[in-house]
Image 1 (tube, helix red, strand yellow):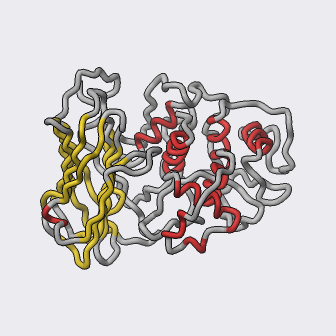
Image 2: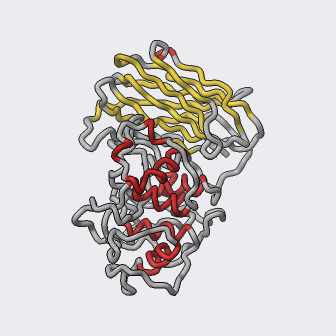
Length: 389
């Protein structure tokens, strides 16, 4: 059986009004010789001046020993790291130039030393691909996996995937705060993500593969959405959809956090006049409030149907993680001054632990709304960061 590989092309949305350049095609070939070789090539290149490629892998099975830049980026500035934080091990190649390169050919080859015969579980990601004028370049990923293994797999992952168009790779998870007043004036009423305790408690292996009709394998977050659903952290709608691009509400995110802790009941009450016992999210909000994970927008209002922002999301997760000490990881973002004071420790912590990424190398956009796909991605990263899965 072929190894289980998940390959995700993550395209960064530069701004809400960004104009996208013509698409490119990136082929990735994985071969098994004395070492593992993962080579990325570009064709139909419309011209790019900056890019970042990331290869996630299982450190128990493989070790990245070298990254060999390809000929087409040889004249550009190149930076790479064969091993990053242990919490999210990956090899990274970043490149930038003063003009577009329009050549086709090899971008880079990642070389991995074999540590065992176990599945290294590579995840390939294009986290940035931009033209010199700042336009984000859409791309399609084609995988040619030539590695065979004697490990059996119950689930076959696609060998060919394509990246979504005009989508942000960064995710986040919601959280309310009394000092935050910039909420939307309206929000669609959602179906509950989960109204009973989850089937799979985090930390246990999922029992079944979950498939949503509107989340194809080519979606940038498909693997994260599937994993979050299989662990019982999120669920979809009665018609079989997940609506990944919809913004998530505060009640929906509170439900994710509740699910993450096993769907517990509590006899306590909340001070919120808009969280009553007849609401589907009542016990989720009550439990999270009494755990100290969430606060109201005012002393008496929770605004459960309002959309959640990136900085609010990180604040709720930061509280759930126990308010760990943090540094100043946000300083690398030009818009770090936009982060609300209440969210500064949380955003620093989330960036340090690679739970949230910037929408570009220089922007974190703390007050942007977070989508359901982004939050499914972030909750899985969070669970792995705190060693819950």
